[in-house]
Length: 380
Image 1 (cartoon, helix red, strand yellow):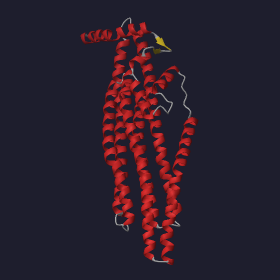
Image 2 (image 1 turned 30 degrees about the vertical axis):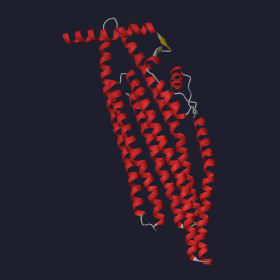
Image 3 (image 1 turned 90 degrees about the vertical axis):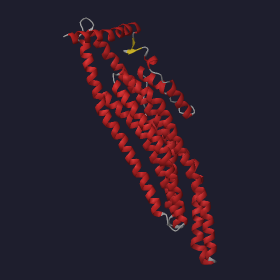
Image 4 (image 1 turned 90 degrees about the horizontal axis):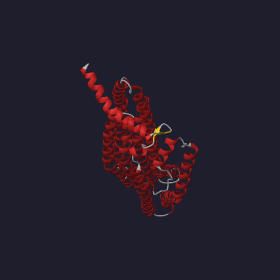
């Protein structure tokens, strides 16, 4: 009995000042008017605008504000139009390069298939290797330009997440998810460190090694074919393991930790509602605050998802167009050109697939982690 009295006194001291302050501040459409002062999105906006160069036309802070006021709309049609526009622009920008590669591949095939029949065979071999070196330089230029796009996109993604994670973690506290907020913040810091260490220092350089080994393999009568296959298998398998471990760990946390917060919050609320005189008022206020916190958390989370998609959309389209054009080029040259030329072009396409997979995996890790937290905390 003595413990209950002490607990009630503590709850009154904790909640009663909040009730008075909330009554003084008032509400706007059922939401606290000062919610913008409770969470700062200035750093998120400044980082996003800096990374995009002000070209996206999307503002995370403005989006959250519109969601809170019930004015925002999401259009799949606009997103599809943006995607098709980027694909068309990237195809127009890379078509000259693929035509140059097709011409060099055709010339190399002519040297190997016809020069030896009408003249000196060594002349045909020499012409082929000169053409192949020109082709190798052209393919390398396209690949390294695409590699820089992928590396820059991953760096931009990590930079944005460093700004978003503190703000999003803070919104979890608005719904009483203090344990969830701390666990999510800690987990995302681990994910950021792992992605930065593995993606930028192991996996992406590994794609460079695979590309160079594949190119050298075509000049050495396939002496490095097994090594190239081993490197590609390692890069693919390691990506799957990293993705599965991080998402699995985040999923387990998302199913367990919000339940702990729910049990804690229910016990506090039930005790608060039992207080004589202010119990009903305190319960109504707590429901309003928790509902507002859920809306703020969802708005910031969805705004972060949109920012991640915008940051990765253009780089992903660039890599996709590069990969698709090189796959098409290798298929078109196979009947008329030498097999080493076709294998070199296809190796560049495989390298593009690896880069595309790493960028997609990096974006999905953050997207799914945010979605898991949003869904689990909303359901609980």
